[in-house]
Every structure is written in structure tokens, then in C-alpha cells.
Length: 178
Image 1: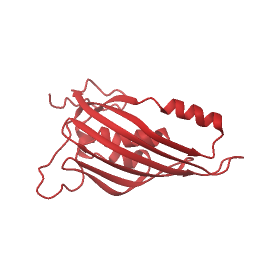
Image 2 (image 1 turned 135 degrees about the vertical axis):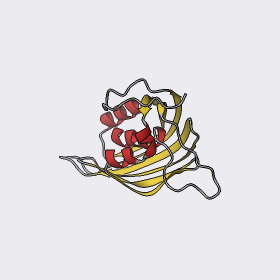
Image 3 (image 1 turned 60 degrees about the vertical axis):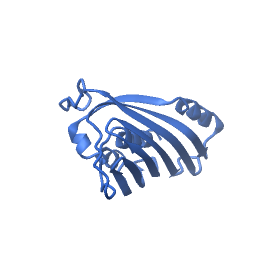
Image 4 (image 1 turned 90 degrees about the vertical axis):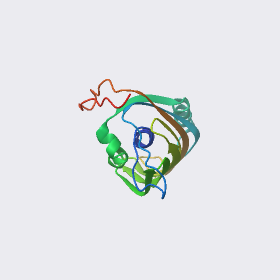
């Protein structure tokens, strides 16, 4: 499940404008630089898991997840790329323009099944607020029967300044603006 959350954070909290802007709206592009995003799970439903692993999973996922990441100019130019490549996603709606976020599709993760995702929200050049839902039915494994989960979460992001480096990806740091 973390891959879905990470994909959504990468696509929403650490992205820029994409798709067609609504008519008569000025373009709104998120700035490159260091972005901090916090995801808080608002609901989590799981079926087909024994009570102990289910309880441990809810405990692990209950505190908000905060991370900081450098958004390069290249990533800002193609904001949904990380989402569609990380989880082999097929987006049927991909509006990330004019300050509006409206994304829906399915993502495949080898060995974990298919997940349906929906994300809606808004953004400015240096802030983002979004809500997302993930629904998945996982294939049976071993003696376990079919398993499924539903998760809803709130995502808040903000640009915190210039990038200091991006050693994890080997990319040159992007100084951003400001």
C-alpha cells in the first residue's frame, strides 16, 4: 500500500501544472525547489487479513507521513510522470492545471494487484491541498483468500525553499526560485 501513497505524493505534492488549463484561467505552475508534503490517512478499510497484521498495519499507517523532496525543473515540466512510471499507472483523468487537481486511473504493482486511484484538490505556485482515495483487490496468496483495501487520505504540501542537492537520484540540484 505504501507504493500507492508514495505515487500519489510524488504526483500531487511534488509536481507542477499538467493537462489543459480551464478556459480563461491564467496558468498556475508549481515552483521547483524543496517541497515538504504531509499525508494523513483519514480512513482505512481492509478485508481478508488476520486481526494481528491488520492492527499492526493500522498502527503503522495512523500517524501522518511527512517528507521533503527536491522538485527539479525537469519534474516540474512533466508532473504526472513519476506517478505513471512508479506504479505502472493508466490515468483516465489527468488535470493538474489552473490551480485544479483532478486525477483518476488505475495502477498495477507486480505481486500486489491493481489499485484504483482518485485525487482532487487545488494548488498555488508554493502550496498544495488534495484528497485522494485508493481502492484495491489483491490476489489470494497461499492459504489467504481474496484481500481488499480502501484508503482515503488528505495531502498538504508547501515549497520550503531552494534545493540543496539530490544525491538519491543523481540529478543536478535545481536552485528553483527564491
